[in-house]
View 1 (cartoon, rainbow, N blue to C red):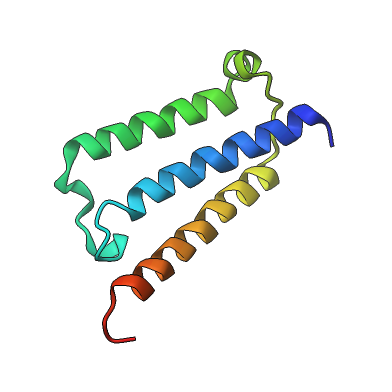
View 2 (view 1 turned 135 degrees about the vertical axis):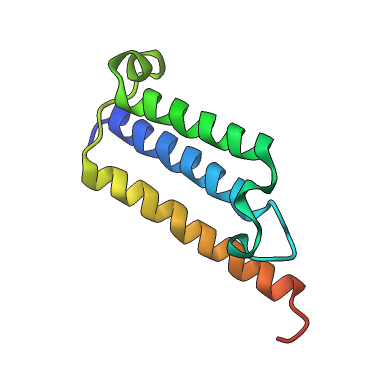
Length: 103
């Protein structure tokens, strides 16, 4: 595995993790699925812009060349998204442990 591919996977993992963390931390006392997604239009707009920019960075030659990244396969993209979902579950578990008095 080349250094550029490792850099690409780490970049994607950190970017996806940051997006999921932003969604999870919108309401620190409640799980993200109980918080209305469309209640904050600026947040939704920023989230959409970040997803588009991440897609352009990983999906276009120009975006990859600016950051010296390599193309990734769908399997690698799936691993990156799975990493983000795993981290989201860990954050939600931490929120439940820290703020739920019934445990």
